[in-house]
Length: 165
Image (cartoon, rainbow, N blue to C red; front, side, top):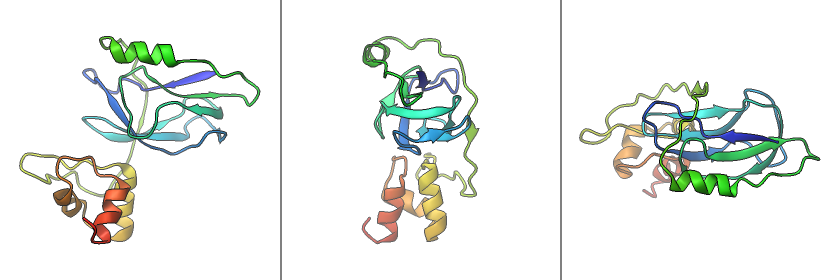
């Protein structure tokens, strides 16, 4: 059983948010398969799998804010017993940050500019939000004005497009 952990993407990274799972439990994955969207203070990206196998358990729920080293999911074979990582994860959340090796990640390319959406603010949106904005034909900067100080989600873009924001 392999643990998928939140990598330390930059030196002073203290936490990351699981934006959206791109795989589901029971799904067979290969090395490099995007597992989830990660949102950090500095970037939004897709976390690629470093192992092949079956996604046995998604541990961190969407929108969970967790420290580097936190076990996000378990990948293994269908007949492998699951391992309990709750104590390991609880210890990470209640202790000072540990040294977690950096992992290679695939940045998400986007044609949407990371422009300022508010005074001194930086536009932050998940890859799914950027895709939805492009497909629907709305400007993320306009959506950000309706949701100030928030990492924009796909739902925010859809609400804005429907006039519900």
